[in-house]
Length: 354
Ligand code: PEP
Ligand code: MN
Image (cartoon, rainbow, N blue to C red; front, side, top):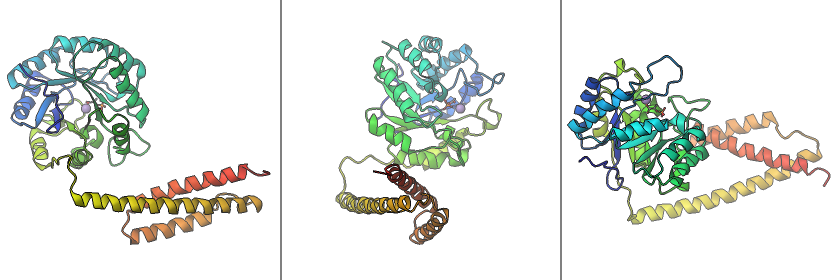
């Protein structure tokens, strides 16, 4: 009897395997390599593939489930498969698949999620839900809620990155603030990371994986193929078995400390004080902004004064970088503050005649 090893208590939950099942031999080659690694808790393989355009390889279908059953018996690896239709769920349950995952495109469609969650009512199987392709945390939360409402209690979220206007250098931008927000809103749901679909190429997989672990994510789902260049799907991002083994030996699995060292508390106290000061300064800055708004309104001046904005931006970027702060961060921060300043001055303009 193979346990699902669905347990997030002591070690990261590592899922590995090919993007798609392609042949019995391909699955066997990966499974043989992975089964020797105690870190690997489950074997993944896509049987039905959601492809962006039609007429490509769309998965091997039911035959692949038969191969997976044999792999499970031979290599003692619990299995996880992507499902997108209730018929996929039925076929997986018949084939003894241990866990299911919901792909990003499916999560993005509440009709599909509703249908799948209804099909899982009363079924005792762990379900992993990828984030939707768009950076919409509510859609992700909504999908998880639909499964919870149908009684799926072994539920995990998978962070696989988002499609944004500028994903560079990633295939899907990680936007770490979104899984952090999910964790805040649904602390009971474990989150694991899929660095393969975030990175798009092997180069960033190690850094994305380490960052996910350092952000207290509870596991990883990584695509591994015996010969990635020949893969029928996601050829650019899959690791070969050796690369995967190297990755596992490089990653640092830090513990989530429940007993906080004294010094950490001291440092946290300093952060609290600095944040208080920062908020007081921001509030003073916005008061001055409002006074300027009144002046601009009374003198009939536009809110945006481009020369001033350019000068301010260059000055703060220079000063910030001199202080060792990352220039991209300063730019983002100034843009957010400027946006709020414009909003405040708009409010003043709209109060004209009061
Ligand atoms: C996959 O895991 O192979 C897959 C299709 O991923 P996603 O749903 O994240 O695009
Ligand atoms: Mn893939």
